[in-house]
Image (cartoon, rainbow, N blue to C red; front, side, top):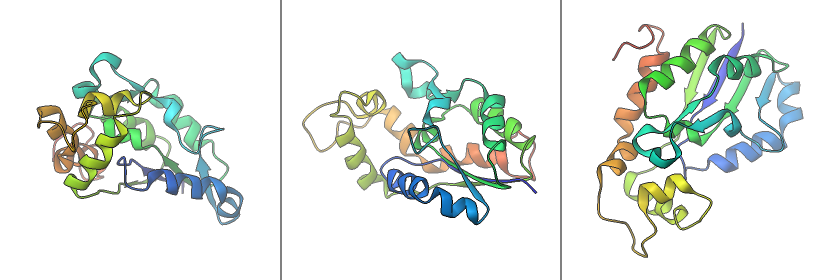
Length: 185
């Protein structure tokens, strides 16, 4: 039985610590039957995910350039249980992109577990806004701006990101065994 645990973020919830821990313990985990999927030198699978439109990260978000290639990469890991992580999955805002991923993964894995860590929205927003001050963080800059304030004036794109129920419902719709891919909950 081929199993996948896919960690989909969110940002500012300890994701980097989790990824580094899995990378640093890769050999011990493999000895116990868990392969860590990552794209060296990184400890995550970010390179497979791309902006749908870099000028309009919100509301278009990220997607996989080739879901089948990503699924093949994961399935090719040297164990029957695979762990993969990218907080950039939390920028998947289109049901179609998640459905494409689900279809590709379901062809290669018998069991798929989606894992996400959430943070109280107010704390998440403040921490994520601080990331927007960095020049190398276009998603955070578009989401929160660069103003020297605790938070910018509320905008619809922030609701898109912080509405955990709406975002996670798309993942549930795509991966829950009882529902066909693409059908709402």
